[in-house]
Image (cartoon, rainbow over all chains, first blue to last red):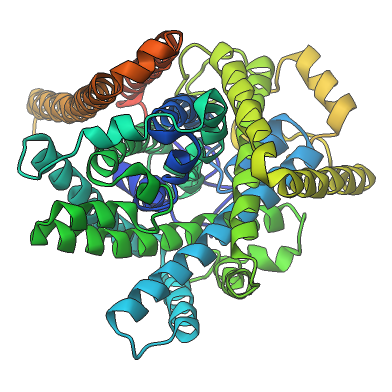
Length: 473
Length: 101
């Protein structure tokens, strides 16, 4: 039996060749950079205990989000990921804002990663300049993604494995006493800002895992999505939880907390403080490779989100073309390049990154909500509709929504205007797209094109009245 | 080839396919078990290291320890049950969707 029910409807569409390790490479590749840099702002806000608290709370939320993404991704098998889940189970307004949020989240991250790669390159080779190197990195990664998803994600697998291997070897060497540690640093910087700091640290907790939900966005290109997506996604989530714990241990044992809180490359700095050349080289290389892997994964996910929005005519359908030879959404892939360059050289990169986090948190409210709606519309778990059913649902989905709102509320400490601007932007987008889609025709659900039966009658009528949901293919 | 011969070849093929599927499922299960073991080991090691080094602060804020332990427990429990469900799903659908062909 063919697994993908949508094979026929996507004939001449995206190629279905990806395996679980590609899913892992996409998810971990995008996120691991957050463990090499950025997460340490949790230390600046809440000290070591604040960082541990932020990692555990965010880790619990992302574990649930990963399970939701596994279930939704393996069920729908569509490239848009969170956008398609919101489109099918919530409504067009929510779909549009999730699609835009995912696009913004990954494009902003790609721009930031490309700039960091350029900075590292200029530190190694001072004769180089940041601007041309950033352009070169973005152009090169766009070309790799244009040529084919298998090549792009196989490259990501190699880069990410090397970067993760660097963390693992450094951790075990440190834990077994090869590297001298300073447990006194932990007590000195345990909780410098008290309980307020503990909660303020939560706003940077997502750095450890931001973007892991993107792993499920390659479901449409997987050979066996009902195996590849849950296995790759969960393996990826565990990898990040392990990496996060190792990173906190290494950095807090080797760097004084006041320095750690403002460090640009904390893992590399920890290796430098450890004083063993092989680890300095490994972690330096890891920092560089993980930025490339992250930018590469971001091109892949951002282009799929744009492709899905285009396929459903939320944006110009011109972007929905698939390359006849490489089977990639090549116009959507190429379109990521000018947008990433514009973000990179806007001069407001820190604001762009904060916007990326707000966009991500919005997705973490709407992904579990999509799952709750999915469970209401299709309560039966059959092979066709729900080949993978996550545990403890929908209770943990409600819990994840609660944590996402809690983390979002902590952004009021320091990022009040960014948060208000972000919410205003997405509110306007919601009403604009809701009203636009209501006026257009073809807003009836066509579940059979996914190979699904009609949903439960009560739920179906309700969703039509409320949202006029569309399933246009 | 005779009908009996065909049946024998087909039966041998099925046995070999079943053995292959069982072996591949075991590899997936071993991967999941390995990842979970690493997760428990590293997370507990971190929590133990941080708690033992920051004992004076944690004694001052005694209500914090149960909150940390609650989230550690929740994370372990949800991830473990999730992984078991992944294995169960693969086992249930592996022949139907021909995962390992």
